[in-house]
Length: 278
Image: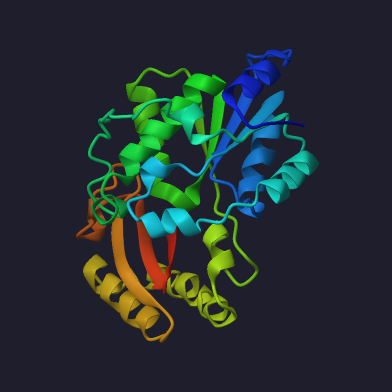
């Protein structure tokens, strides 16, 4: 594996790849775990070459403290990717990705109106800025994203198509700990007590699959929120049930053939997100 830490180094490494028509790309913000590695494994199965980026993108953080504390573990990340057989690790500097301020505003097709959108203003526009910039640099044929960030995946698919990129976007299933907690780089920030409490989120939201048979979507939301918040270490920011395609709220079960529950829950100050198909 070639580790590149600048745009110039990356371009040199890229030119050494013999088959530029079979490149799989996995964009990450580092602090890699089994969830990220599952994306690399999916890319390896489909593509001759796999490129992984590690870049903590400042334009998608609307909380400066969150940006400052986001875990950065490049040496460990590189070791993991070496074992997984990645061809190039691209770990650029901010000036490589943004040589000047990126003022682009993207059409996100209204997919940012709910969920993370109103809670993190500008977040998905920042995602679009960095992903399109990376697409232009890496020029992949395939790109791989995790379903844990389900809304992000839908938005990436939308603007990739809308902007005419000839890139196939593949969503990969959520990877969970043995106790159900969704793998996340932020899990490393949990205290031991919070780590014990956090699986309560997934265990509780799974109950929605049974509750939907007797309760309305809003009643399910209220029931799930009450149970999550009954744990003193957890505090629900939001729970929504949306259509898995257009991401619009489901107010009655007949509204959608593909309902999905997504949520954000605080184990202060760590913010955890999760989602399941219903």
